[in-house]
Amino acid sequence: MKWLTRQEQFVLCVVIGLVLTGLLVKYYRTAHPVVTAGQSAKP
Image 1 (cartoon, rainbow, N blue to C red):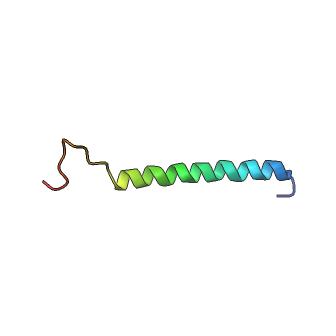
Image 2: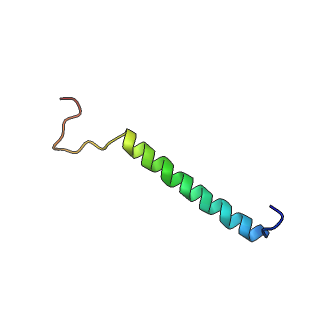
Image 3: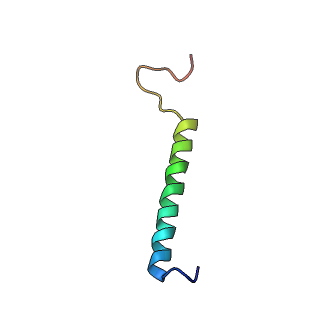
């Protein structure tokens, strides 16, 4: 990445990290749904 400055590389890494974190949270919440007080864990 010689065409990007050090600051641009840092910003790009932060953005990629945030996107990956968001995807991980999305998939985790899909796999582990929240059980509310009105719902039972096992029917």
